[in-house]
Image 1: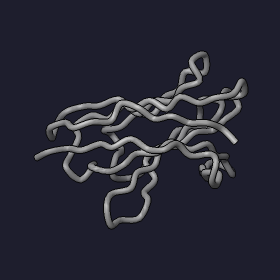
Image 2: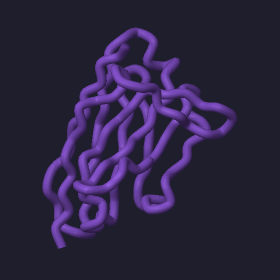
Image 3: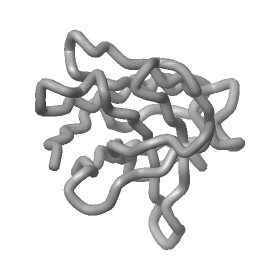
Length: 124
């Protein structure tokens, strides 16, 4: 298992920006493929973005393409999610997770490989 701690959430007006961070424990972070997900009240969990352990195979959910950017800093054991042009529909709890790639598709691991989440609220 891995300890993941998200931060950077908050309240922002529509059109604004936030940068989320996810700090991971362990000395093997550079071997982790990481993803971001979100869940709004009453809705299913939604994939947001993923980045392979090598820094490649980056891809995004359709609803955030062109607005969000995922990146990683292995020296800091941290993955980031830069969120620009935020919309009220981006309001959700955002989670990071360790996972793996099968081909070019990212899959999160189960319990024990997720952070506790950080709330993002976008006002109109």
